[in-house]
Length: 631
Image (cartoon, rainbow, N blue to C red; front, side, top):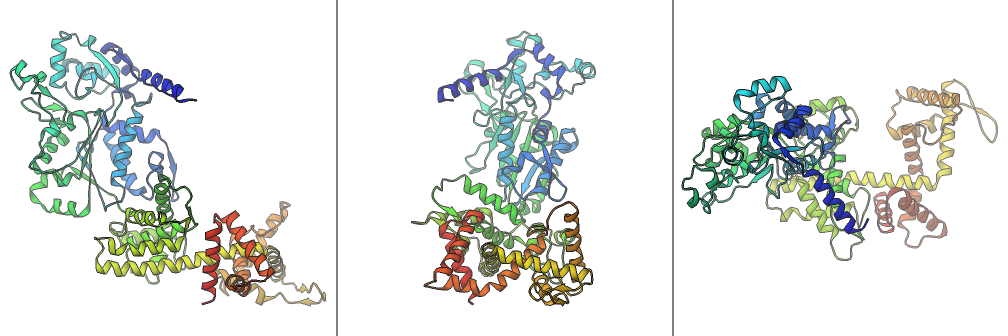
């Protein structure tokens, strides 16, 4: 489709949304589907739920509305959705200000931005359609036209809920333009848009001396005040404050707690009574979600101020800590990198994972549990079981450290340092070691890092490096095992023959002399020890292997290299240990012979084809692992 066709299609879609009719026509729509007249909290809740849910890794619901942008904030998002669910039922919590509190770069602004962008899209759909009195500066709900005396009867007959009253501008218009005939009042469909100031408002604090309350509540229209004479005439007032235009939608207060007190007092009435005090008018009804965000230090100063107790009582706080799962942290950086223009620069495998390991380590608190290191804790949080601990311990660890995730290295710092490494001159590929160097070099430039934190972060860099050393050796191990696949198969078959003989209390025949011998205990243990199978657990492990072997045989399937994940890992580690000298020679030799060169090329090809490396980082990985093995 060419550009002109796309523009024509876009205009056609816009025309579909441009519905206009009388109040009577609108009432027919509402009578069939009451969602057209739902309140702001219910609209946002429906928007999130209409996007769908899925089951998370621990059985908890995850909301698809957030999954493309936010990672590792399952608990926070669950609390957020619970708030909107309660508010959608018109419970008292809807009369509260929602405050997102957490460290910088934790995702608070992203949550609000997603809600705003989501509303813009949702109100353009069939399910999320919003209708307003045409010409109303506050995009008034048309049902407010129904007189108070008739509402109870209408609500009962049509199963509708009507809340709120006409704004001063609409009351004037109904009398002057429609002469009281509310059935003729023109209603139009609207789409929320922050740019056009419809349904979405944003307020950012600035200098209290120069900032005026009119930014929130509107101001006198100097061009018409002379014509109408008095400030109490709606035609002489501009109802264009952020609280006015956010009616029926969402109002974002950026860093609300930094606002001057006179701005916060206006929120007291709006949150509790759902009314705005504007100029020389009576209270004006407003239905809007008020959401703000702040950091922990600002919040602590706020709650320590006794003067703000009334406002504190009208706030619901949701903590937005840093993510504590490495796999989710990787997704954050993948998202940020994908939004950039980095053609021609390759990011080696484990580069983003290593950055994520360091970031998450910096956010964790030491545990009092014996044998629980930060690295073990990190792996448990990411869904892995580690020595002496399982996923059952995670809840206890989280309860032990309630502030975990409220401090540490932010994703913003990590992506800034990654950006520095990615745009260096003549760089074609960056790897995990480049990332660790970039993270370390940035500590001196980061003004908020204290001398104590500097030392701690250097130790975490070293710990992350040790973890990467193991990951790197495993990568090369897998590539080498593939290059020696025949050796791996032979080792597997030998192990299976010996296990079968051991479990059946039989002897095994030597393939050359045909002499009957006892099962080779030394061979079996040398493999089992690679994955930590103890002497006491060896019998159960071998019986498990035999059961898997018999089960596959009954189905006519052959037990192969991939049939048992732990055995596969053990075979790979055993073979790599046996090939250790080969790896050292082939990766460290300055002038490899033809056979060594062939092996190196086989491993490099494997790393490129199956593991996501490029020629540059594959060769650097081999050299690095060779250096590790030669220490």
